[in-house]
Amino acid sequence: MSAKRDYYEVLGVSKTSSSDEIKNQYRKLALKFHPDRNQSKDAGEHFKEISEAYAILSDSEKKQTYDQHGHAGVDGRYSSDDISQGRGGGGGFNDIFESIFGRGGGGGFNQQQRGSDLLYQTTVTLEDVLHGKKMEINLQKQIKCDNCSGSGCKPGTNKKTCVTCNGQGEVRQTRDMGFASFVTAAPCPTCRGEGSMIEKPCGNCKGQGRVKGTKKVDFQIPPGIDSGDYIVSNEGNEIPNGVNGDLVIRVQVQPHRYFHRDGKDIFYDQDISMIDAALGCEISVPTLEGNEKVKVNSGSQPNHIIKLKGKGVSHINSRGTGDQFIRMVVTIPKKLSKHQKNLLNEFQKTTD
Image 1 (cartoon, rainbow, N blue to C red):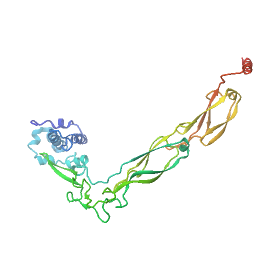
Image 2 (image 1 turned 90 degrees about the vertical axis):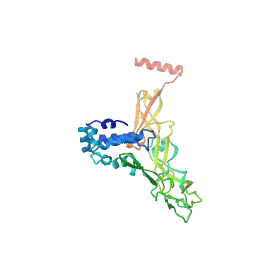
Image 3 (image 1 turned 135 degrees about the horizontal axis):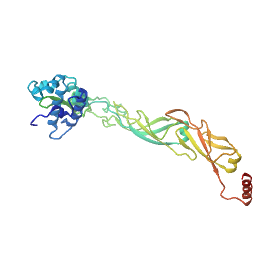
Image 4 (image 1 turned 30 degrees about the vertical axis):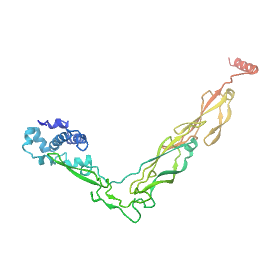
C-alpha cells in the first residue's frame, strides 16, 4: 500500500471511540483478515495495516501523539518494535490473540474429547403423563473396550509420547508480519493433536479404545411430560479418556381417544339428551383415574362446563395438578314419533 490511510479509517472507529470499542473492532477485523483464516492475496497487507493502526490507537500516549501530528508524529518517533509492544489501555497483542485464537495464537490441542450424542424416540400415553413411566432399553452404542480398558493399546503395552510435539499435541509457527511477529499453533501432524501414539494397538478395538456394543439403560419419564426432547446425561457414545455423549430421548405424547390436554388441564365432551339437560340427572364420566359420578343440574344449557377439581395432570415446569373440564353436548333427536311430537307440542303451548 503506497500512502498510509488514517488509522481511524482503517479500523472503522472515530476519535471519540472508547478503548473497548477500538479493541472490539480490531477483534472483528483480525478474525476477518488473519492470514491463517483468510487466503486472499491481500489479507496479509490488510492484517498488517489494521494491526499497526490498533497498536497506535490502543496506546494512550501514541494515540495522543497521532491525534496531534498524524502519521508524521508516530512514524519518525517510534520504531516497529515500539509500535508492536504497546502497553496502552487497549492491552498488548498477546492478550488480543490469546482471546481470539487461544493460547499462543491457536485454539489449543490435546484437549479432552466428547462422545457423540444418541437419539432414542418413544411414545407415551396420557396416562403416562399422569403417572410417569419407567423405561428400560437396550441401547446400541460405542462402549469402552474391555480388552484394553479403553487405552487402545495391546494389553501389557502403553502409549508413547510423540517426539514431534513432545506430548503437547501442537506445533507452533512464527509468522513475521513486518512490524511484529505472531506465533500460531496447529495440530501436530504426527500424532494428530493427541500428544501420544500407540505403537502396538489392541487387536479387539484396533487402537480406538472403544467398540460397538449394547448397554442396558434405565431412565424415568417424569409425570407431566410434554412432547419434546429430554436429556439423559452421559449415556451417549462413550469415548476413552473423554466425556461421554448424552442420550436424547425424543418423546411424543399420543392423542387420547376421549380426552384433550391443554397444559395441566383435561377436557372431555359428554353427550346428554335434551331431556336430561332439562330435568337434570346424574351421569358417570371417565377420567384418567377411572369413572367419576357427576350431577347435571336441571336446565343445563348446551356447552355448559362442569369442573372436576384436581382430575387433570401435573406439568414438569409448574406446581400442582390441573382440573378436568366436562362440556355438556346436548343431543337433539333427529326423528320423533307422532306421540313424542304431540307431547312436545303440548309442552310448547304451556310455555307460550
